[in-house]
Image 1 (cartoon, rainbow, N blue to C red):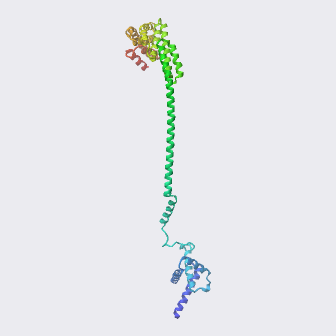
Image 2 (cartoon, rainbow, N blue to C red; image 1 turned 90 degrees about the vertical axis):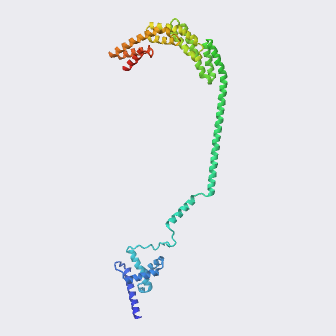
Image 3 (cartoon, one colour; image 1 turned 135 degrees about the horizontal axis):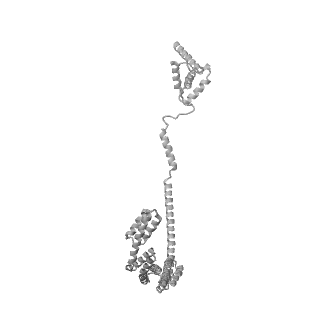
Length: 360
């Protein structure tokens, strides 16, 4: 027993010495095996980390006189832990309570639950979805009804416009047709001015036929004026043929009532006009009169004129070539152009004139 008490006293002395050294902050001394035993005893006695905090407070408040008791030993053990923390060993903040590892949820599960809560918060219920679907259907039906109504109104407007146009056309066509018939009768009676005047007046009332009436009125007037001019110019065959030919073209547009009359006049006068123009050295005029004579069936009567025109074309081509060689390109160009105009395309002089113009 005496030996046991001595051992106990020695252990208490050692523990008190360690506590004193640690309270003074002597961090450099090595701890012996007895200190480790004291730390183990203190760790077993602490229970949890909240009790550790209280025991740490005890160390600072513990009087030196009480060292050597069991409480002193316990406080000394926790003081050693404080020294370890100061030396760099991390310890959790005593004020922060760590969750029990057995009850803590994994981080993935926590995140998943948060996501599920957010999704549930913004996901509509079945009733809300049904109401939204019904609202969409109602809006779509309303749009379809509005579109159908617009189309119906558009059809009504188009039908009204079409019926009105048809009514106007029927009304104008009735009077317009009568005016056209009356004007045609006047034209055939050689009352050209009256026929043209009637159509121009009717065109103002009949918008649907206005364009047609105006064209016919112009043709009627042209036939009347040129026929009268040709009759007055019979002594000047080229002038008369030109006027009769214009009347012939206008009569084709007016219905052709005077084609036979005008062709007879041209058949008589065109050959004479071609010869007259040739005598006047109007080469292009002679060619034009010869072509008109041929168009009304009098081509044989102008064969001599065509032969003369071929000879003149040959002379013009030769003269143009000389001018081109002498550098008088402007003069050569005029001669080639004249030669080209007075002969048909099938003529060799026509081809020579075209080649000469290209070479300039």
